[in-house]
Length: 166
Image (cartoon, rainbow, N blue to C red; front, side, top):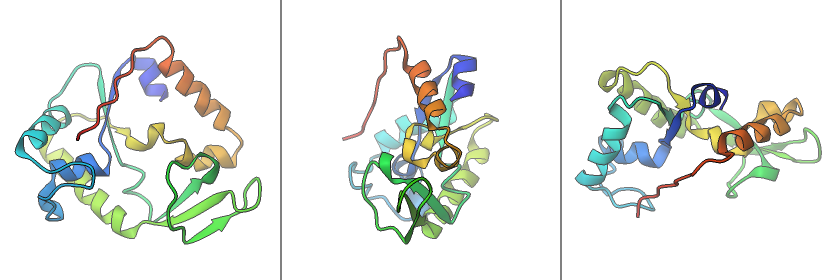
């Protein structure tokens, strides 16, 4: 988020769903994902954003998900309930959920390995940058207010466009 503020750039977020639509061959997902049927047209449009160098655009991919087998989720900021493998008590009883994500990590690594083959951009953001429940380290150290302040600064006086595929 500090990079976005420093550079004044826009963000294109590619989470697991979008990456599956771009690389359906990795896991034989030509049928699409739960919220979007796969099509060549959608794939082409997403590839255009992901692989074409666009000035002042930071493409965000799932670096964090591809780097950990176990993920900590701050439950007060969770977007959707999941089947947790366990819980931690950091600031109060059972306030952090533990996700085992070995399968998701493997998929994420496959996606990330494909990127250098097709794109010359050196800097990527992280797709979890706007998902507050994944800021475990900041929660642990009592710095979530700093993250929220960065959100406010990024979104202040901005026109925000959220695109979803349907």
